[in-house]
Image 1 (tube, helix red, strand yellow):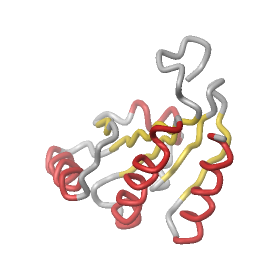
Image 2 (tube, rainbow, N blue to C red; image 1 turned 90 degrees about the vertical axis):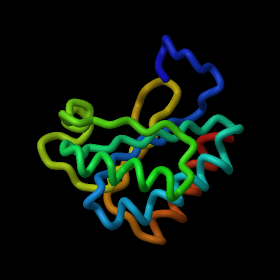
Image 3 (cartoon, helix red, strand yellow; image 1 turned 45 degrees about the horizontal axis):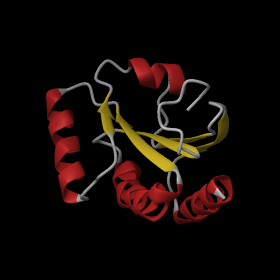
Image 4 (spheres, rainbow, N blue to C red; image 1 turned 120 degrees about the horizontal axis):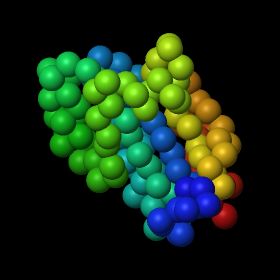
Length: 129
């Protein structure tokens, strides 16, 4: 996204931060995959950022990716450089950012619940129309 975007078909980026020790993050993962499958061809780009800094946590993330058949990009932010920029010094997980094509943040969601999932789906639909 932004003025120098490489993918001109992107209408919205969903950026989610998670960790292997976060139960709600694990619940959110299949939902993110569903959003990717449903809206990817319409311009939604889902990106997951794992903030696990230990090798064991990174292995668990790999297992979760395989188990949930994740097909969107997953970044490993081992030193939490990206996380600190987006989340600050506290890491409320999961944290989801919807980023518009101009690079501005449309909305931020902290935590995971069924209600938040429904709201997120509606926000994605509205943004990619």
